[in-house]
Image (cartoon, rainbow, N blue to C red; front, side, top):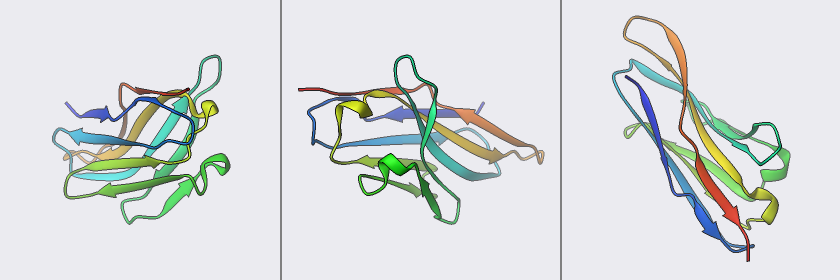
Length: 120
């Protein structure tokens, strides 16, 4: 059973920083694109950032320059460094992974989400 386990959320003051981590466990052949999404109360889930297995990144416009996505392929882990946090960044952040199984299937999985609250 493939699982994504997130950590690093919490309460931070405006202007502060947090680093989220997401580790993938389970038997997989390869881990492909990974990403972070977020969902604020009353809003739809939106892409924050994504990264390919080769390290190419993509960011939502409002996160460019403040957030950095990275990954450690040896550890099957993706990170999201968030700086200059604003109250509007408050949301549940979800990790997402595309992967290939030993049977040749291409599947995807979501993490359970971690709450980030930006407030003074």
